[in-house]
Amino acid sequence: MRCREPFHSCHPQGKKMLKKAKWLAKEAQLRIKYMISKDCIFCQMAEGKITTKPILDTESVFAINDINPVSETHVLIIPKSHVESVLTVDKNHGGIIVEMFKAGQRIVKEKKLSAFRFAFNGGKYQHVGHLHMHLLAGGKVNWSKL
Image 1 (cartoon, rainbow, N blue to C red):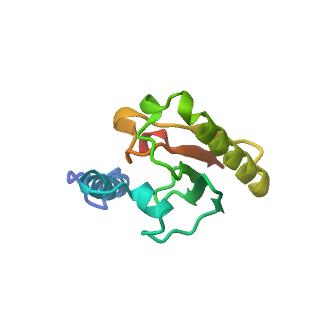
Image 2: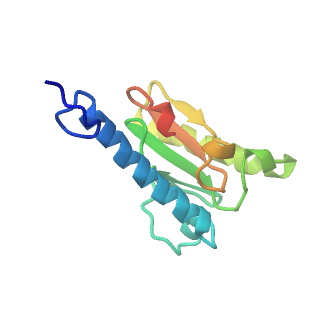
C-alpha cells in the first residue's frame, strides 16, 4: 500500500517535497529579513557593518559567495555605492557597471572557469534592493531558486 501523506518520508515524492519546503521556508525568512531591514544589507556589508568574506574587494565593488547557491559556483558581484536595481541604472552608473564586469572577469580567470553566466535579476526576482550581478558556473543552474 502506498503512503498517501505527501510530506512523509515513505511517500515516493516525500523527501523531495520536504527538501523543497525547507528551502522555501529558509528563502522566505531571508526575503522578510531583507524587506523589513531599515538599512540595505549590501550597503551594510560594503561599509563593514556586517562582516563578510569577500572573494574580491576593490575600491568600487566587492564579491562574495551567495549564501543560497544555485550552482557549484555562485558569486555575487556588488557595487559599494547603492544602486536600487537594473531599472534605476542610468548613464552615471556606467563606471560601476564596467567595474562589476571587470571583477567578474577577474574571478572567472582566477577560478579557471571555462563555462559561466553573468545574470542580473529585477522585479520580484530581485531579493535584495541593491544592484548585484550573479556569476554562475559548474553544473546545472537551478533557475527556480535564483
